[in-house]
Image 1 (tube, rainbow over the protein chains, first blue to last red):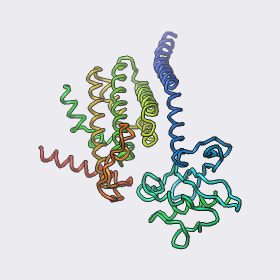
Image 2 (cartoon, chains in turn purple, yellow; image 1 turned 90 degrees about the vertical axis):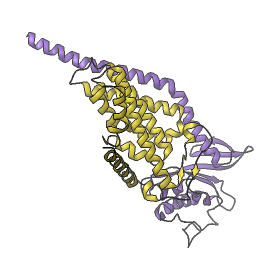
Image 3 (tube, one colour; image 1 turned 135 degrees about the vertical axis):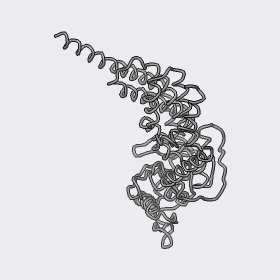
Image 4 (cartoon, chains in turn cyan, blue; image 1 turned 120 degrees about the vertical axis):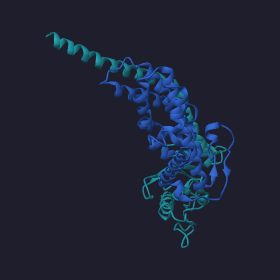
Length: 180
Length: 206
């Protein structure tokens, strides 16, 4: 009986110590999380807003059901939409695309495009990032009706050499959104 | 055990990256530019020093059976703290190295130093050991970042302004680089060359 009690006692202490430590760690982290939460959230918002503002040259933005509406001097001039393609070379490619409103003839133009997330090959496929290459800027001003959305030399869209699959994935995603 | 021998161990003789070959995952993944190397190296240095300090502080308190999980708990707590601090002060940098910050938990340098040194030695020595091992890791990471960024991309200090808050200080050395060095295999090749170089120097010294 005494032996069993002694075992139970040491076992209890061995369990109790890590449990208390884990609880104090959890408390400490929860406390830090509470303190930093507001600033981190506002950092995140600022980061996203800066990206969006860059895309539309500082026009006003308003959140809408499918993304953002873009306003200049009070009238809506376009929209920003989020799209994802899984036809890239590796993983998904997330894009933000700013488009003008549909004109009377049913045409839409690209204002700008940004890649927000991708896992394409560094040094080859990452030329879709504006920080790495100017490739993504060629879509500015391209429209649903007046652009041949196949890759060069047949079409109007330049290919990143060595990254045909990545180029095609991004191009097709933009073309499909324009055609909608 | 003196401070000088600890410093020698951490920086050269028993360098975590070149000799112990611990923490290769973050080392290989973030060493493709100087800025990401500096970001992750400094974070690792801080976490390693703090975790060594704390584990040395509690060394009399722990039982053999529960020592390892408690050490991991302490390390994980500091890594989460570091992650939150990065998001708090250096959000743009966190967007680039955030994925690897969480992986510092699995960096065996930290558990290795906790178990092999901090759980058996007094607080000041353990903290100093963490500082030296962390510095050794940081220096190798910076060297690899410099080599791989220059050879792989032809630039140096790209994106460093995200950490320092100053204007862009990218130095364009060449128009493009040798792609292989920037790709993951290039990390292994660079590390291999560095280890070989260290062995040559050691041989020459002996």
